[in-house]
Amino acid sequence: MTELLSFIDAVRPGLGAFLLLVGSLLAIIGTVGVLRFPDFYTRLHAASVTDTAAVTLAVIGMGLLAPSWVVMAKLVAIWLFIFLTGPTASHAIANAAHTAGLEPLIGRQGRGEDEGDAS
Amino acid sequence: MGYFVFLLGSLAAIWFGLSGMTKPLILAFGAVSVILSAILAYRFDILDRESSPYARLPQLAAYWAWLVVEIFKANWIVIKACLRSNLDINPALVKVKTVCESDLAKTVFANSITLTPGTVSVAVEGDKILVHALYEEEAGPGAFDEMDRRSRLASDGRSKA
Image 1 (cartoon, rainbow over the protein chains, first blue to last red):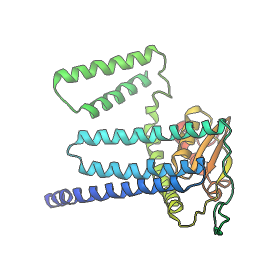
Image 2 (image 1 turned 45 degrees about the vertical axis):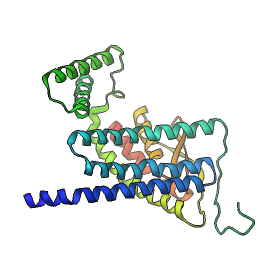
Image 3 (image 1 turned 60 degrees about the vertical axis):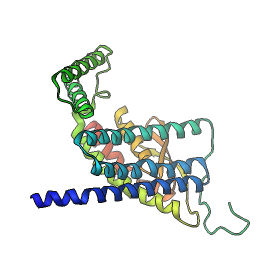
Image 4 (image 1 turned 90 degrees about the horizontal axis):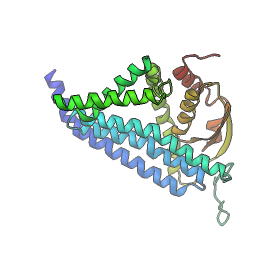
């Protein structure tokens, strides 16, 4: 049992750092998507990668690196609040755009882009 | 009364989770503030199943666990879409009919749609939700049926009317 505990203690920092790295990578991917996607609504989808998967992995990583259970409790609270408020904010933004009459881009975009005919 | 007790319990848990101190003086301050907040909520007459849905916590937690798995699956699709060298997306605006009746169930369902990458709920009109999706294939007929059923089951406790 003590061996298992010391094994977990030895693995914890490395695993935590790894999860933090993967989370940051996902945040970067989300940003790339925001820059690449063509219109407002599709960019919203790319941003949601950042506030779901990236946040979850980063918070788990920080939890593995946390020095005490109090920090862990705060991380859980942060995670829950992001997951409860994030979609509300996204919905508010999307709803505002829809109410203001912004038309979304519909239909297949950009498959086999021809030179000079990029849509 | 049940709502009051549940609110007290959850406020106490949040307070202790955030402070983590066990000195008698600090604990007394915490107890006073928790009881004061609960009494204020009672006086404002906002103690109902929306502000204190803790009685359904086990069901909501089970739904939450299922939803997190779904979110990660959907994330993968959007990540691939972000990184593909030739942009290849098929955005669409679809109307989804929901079987959820209470406001809480509708909120849970609409927020679940938004939380899942690749779909955003744009507007709620009665029992229909306007959804913008990154791929039309992902939002075809029946794509949200299971989420709909589960969110209704979790927040209302019934799967059929």
